Length: 413
Ligand SMILES: C[S@@+](CC[C@H](N)C(=O)[O-])C[C@H]1O[C@@H](n2cnc3c(N)ncnc32)[C@H](O)[C@@H]1O
Image (cartoon, rainbow, N blue to C red; front, side, top):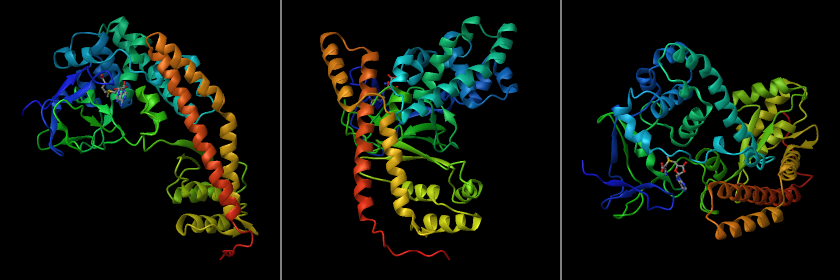
């Protein structure tokens, strides 16, 4: 197979893959052979502490982190196969695991605060559960002491966050695809790797044609700009990410006397008692209002819960319950949630705009560093969240006016 792409450092993202020759849409590219892929099974086989990891039955993420740390900082063991790839991996990618406490604190009150905490908590758990295995490996002389360092594992976890993929065509196994993972993300393409069982390799079929010298992109998935920033350390330019959204969390109140029935009813409709809804500048998800109506309904027993659930989630209409129009109740609840989210956000619209201006001025005088770029991205995210929340409030306020109080009631059957 001819080489169709080459690694280039002359791209805006720092490094990426560019077309060596014209590439047709759909023409298979790359073909990374199976023996180069790094999966949890490979890690258990190739790591010098594979048997210990296997015995401890650790999750895929921890097993892969151990192999990566070993390949980067440990014994020469499997370096023949992956050495050049490991050496080519960046020392930092900017994921939230590399952020300072001050930068994380800038997310306070934003819809990303919880996501950032979830990521750091998951890696802390992984680090803890690896401790006895690493200690055993060290005691048996299988791994060097350096491998036990938290810094080594922060690099592993951050590398996994920004490069691990669930491979379609191979049962969605968590996989590192060496070299193909040098492809950068563009919100305007949808192409992604596929495992091709016929050739036992990973291929990419681009969804558009490329000219010679043009950078080839893939899609890292339908992620919001905030999700991209936390895992990959970058954000698409404002207005270019069609999946951008501000997540709004709603949950059933445990003080609701019918909480258990409501939770059971939601399960029946494949939903959880706590849900995140994506708010966008141009769209208010109807599912959010339906959930809010269900959450707010003053149901008295399981039969009423089932009735309300059926009306909302099967018929898609808001019933009147005990004289109360659940549509207006839902609109009020979402309005409240948006206003609370706005007041919880750190800083202010004007303050954040000024701070961005100041950072831009400073970086025009000196070379912009990763930390100041990151601060700018966080400020931009907060501004975007405020815009989306304000827009949602204004849409809901006008929707509220249109709900006629005397609206035809859907009677309880
Ligand atoms: C899977 S790697 C892609 C290859 C990477 N550029 C490299 O040099 O190794 C993901 C990382 O690439 C960078 N990246 C990917 N897409 C980008 C984009 N659209 N803008 C800026 N950086 C991007 C981010 O640093 C991200 O953490």
